[in-house]
Amino acid sequence: MMLLRGLQFCFKVFVAMCLSLSSTLANEANTNPLQGTWEWVNIKNSCVEIYIFGIEQSGHITSGEETSTARYEIADKPTDNGFYKVKLTIVKDNGGKDCGESYEDNTGDEYNKFVMFHPSGNQYVSCDTEEINDCVGPFKRIQ
Image (spheres, rainbow, N blue to C red):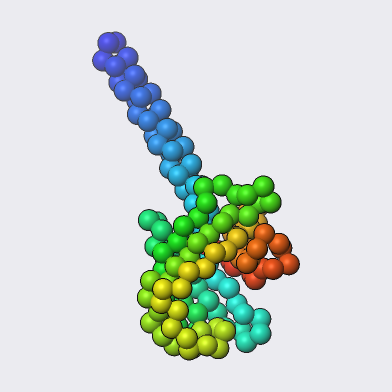
């Protein structure tokens, strides 16, 4: 009988730990809504851009033939207008024609953007200011 109570207690502790861990992981996953792989298609020329925002603020961007590595910072919470401020720095531009039809080397360039997420978390727009008419998108989550 004592062994059975001990096993029940251990099982309850195990379940509580699992629930606590899954809750913690869910909260951590929600702290960076930008993390993941996103796709945007330029409607002017059907060129595809892929943005991979990883953990530890690392990024990889493919824009047409151009590929770049990047670092990014995202605000912990949105502004009063619902935008997250994002700073993107191009660490290394590996060249090629991008979706803007440019061959420019953007190594070292910094971009300050404001992004607003769809309530589903699976789409966002990227804006130069906190004005919705100053945006491109939607960027769609593909992973």
